[in-house]
Length: 88
Image (tube, rainbow, N blue to C red; front, side, top):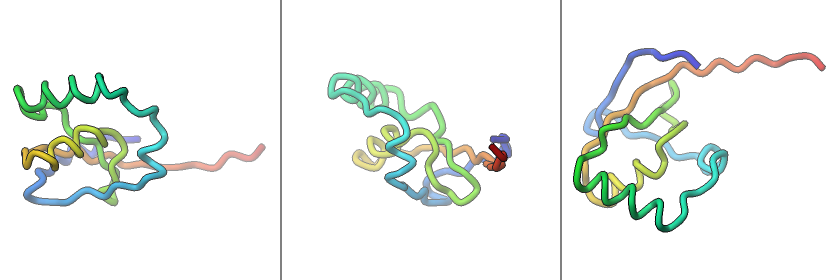
């Protein structure tokens, strides 16, 4: 992945959630999710949500859900994802 240095706000673009991408990482426990939610409510969402060039969320699904639930602003950082197939 390559950082395009392109950032969007949620007022400019809407990210896409693909369940298969979200399931790549283990889910947060209830306690971890609550701690993240408390931190975001107190300090805002200071870590950008990582999206690919098609606006699909690569990292930050929990931050996205919390911000959407509470109507909070967030930033997205677009990465260029290049997949290469290797022969066995």
